[in-house]
Length: 470
Ligand code: AMX
Image (cartoon, rainbow, N blue to C red; front, side, top):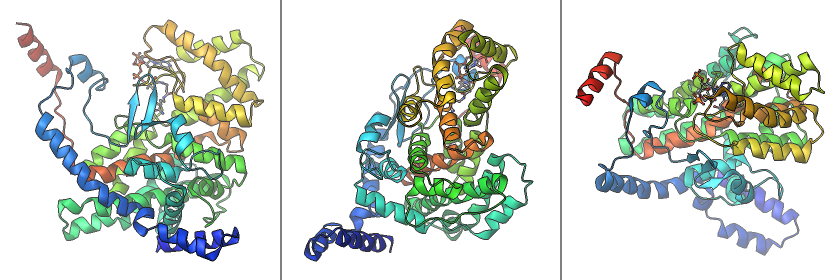
């Protein structure tokens, strides 16, 4: 249906562009439904990838990937390779690659709303799921499919309404996502009985519906807290990013572009980060995508992970409150030391894996240079780039003194009128549904097992090490 609807609307728009009827019909004939349908594309791809994994296991199953040290066990598994995550891969120096494509490459090749514009997040979803760069027609068909899945049952809003309006936006958002679970297709199919080889199909249904519905739930939370509960309906003429901006109450063209970029770059960051890993872990118990994603959101809400999105703007505003906008370098240094000496981290700097400036920071900086070069908070962010890293380096323990994605996002949103910092992590959460939802489909398609690493006690480690030494 979604294919037919989008083909008819494209045929209409081509007729409107004065192409002849014969040309338009010929064009329509070249678009087969399976070309434009993401589900059909996956159905073709999955058997190949299942064979690939089987072969990998059979031929190389015993190859060692590295040594596990006591430091790694104690140190939050840093540097330990232990997860299969197909949709993206993080290089410590280069940053993230989505199915092999860097952020600048994605900006070049993924379809945009207008030539030269920011990538449409639906295009990234297609790329993450299939490993292929979609055409504009494929992205439009997916946009239309997501809109058709965006209906949210009333009890979801009632569940959110049961919370005090002052509850943290992430608490309200995660509650709404939990309530969406009632309609899980995977959970229903599993209860009825479904062969393992078919798990991916209801997971696909749930993941796509989840991705489609989270902007509606997230914007409900925003409008409930900050706009007297005045809700805005989905606009059937808009793509995913622009619709999300619209649902929040922003129809400005630049804000639409910012939201497309924001959602795209926050979608996925390989599998080991807290939110992605949590989603994958919970789903490995065959919890459905809603349960798994709600769990992921609770990890994202921590200040060392996604909450840094809010912490940076709040911190920057506290700098301005104390020192004014024309802050000198010396004042800024003093403020950073004051933050560190109070036992806090400098939000937006450092990373568990990255060892250079995060390319997600760089592309947001480029967006700011293009659209808001004179914004005083943007200028302060630029200044922080020069002042923070030497101080963190001086601490002697920080492995990466450079800025991460969160160092930049807040001032962009703030500039275009989304000033409520406590809400920012919800935007991050909406974006993450695309990466986590995509990987969950592949988890089930590849038949990945229950995740269950071995843990040890200090006593067992001590005795193991004693034995190893003798
Ligand atoms: N400010 C102050 N201290 C910092 C720091 C920062 N920005 N980054 C790291 N450190 C400290 C750590 O707290 C740790 O101190 P400790 O040994 O006394 O506990 C020490 O430096 C070593 O840490 P690390 O190995 O360099 O980093 P990590 O892998 O343990 O932690 C991260 C990574 C992101 C949690 C950390 O850099 C941090 O707290 N940054 C600030 C918060 C932030 O921006 N988080 C967002 C990250 C991106 C994301 O997930 N969205």
